[in-house]
Length: 74
Image 1 (cartoon, rainbow, N blue to C red):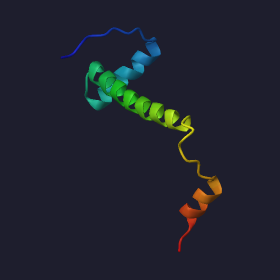
Image 2 (image 1 turned 180 degrees about the horizontal axis):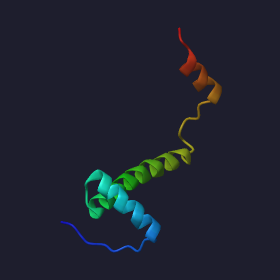
Image 3 (image 1 turned 120 degrees about the horizontal axis):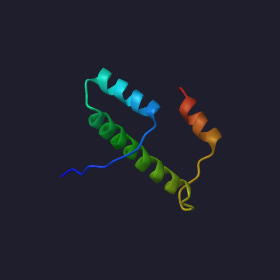
Image 4 (image 1 turned 135 degrees about the vertical axis):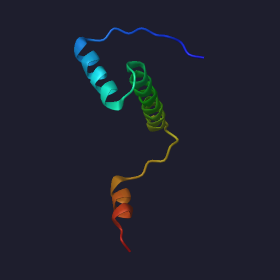
């Protein structure tokens, strides 16, 4: 099932949207749909990350230790 939504955008963004759609050989709706999907995926990842950063029971690892382990080439 799909639903139609309406959004008002400045002309400059619509121009960029039309350019992207033309270059990708997709419709405006297709470009908007893909952009919203990617935005929401990123939003979910960021929300989980921020939530974890605020969790006092989550272990804290010192940066020097992380850096040392990442750069250790033994």
